[in-house]
Image (cartoon, rainbow, N blue to C red; front, side, top):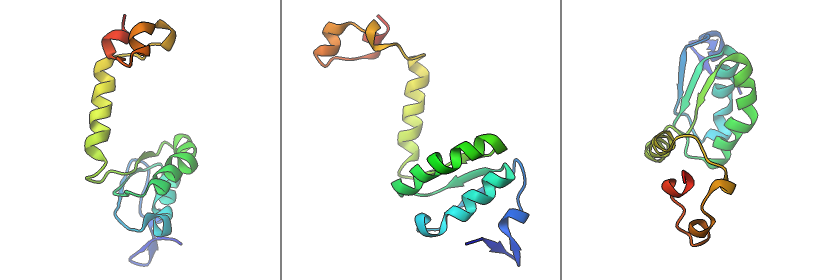
Length: 121
């Protein structure tokens, strides 16, 4: 299924660096054509999906193609996912580079008290 706007295929209307925001749903049924158009064009794609199977499909199926075309895929950018995603990204940024498990204090890890300070020694 192709998306059409004003008689034109959506892929004819977007180009590299353009932003395509998709709020069409259910995404598993009608969302693929928007992702495909963005990936093919090298565009920036955002959607408001909250459907885990679709989110997985965006990363697994379209992610490698997006890397080749320079497209950016931001799925699940709805109100229910954004706060957790942002909090997780900020926590990872504040924590610094990941430490290997072997470097952890095994006593604290085994006791279930795994913390950032434990990982950093």
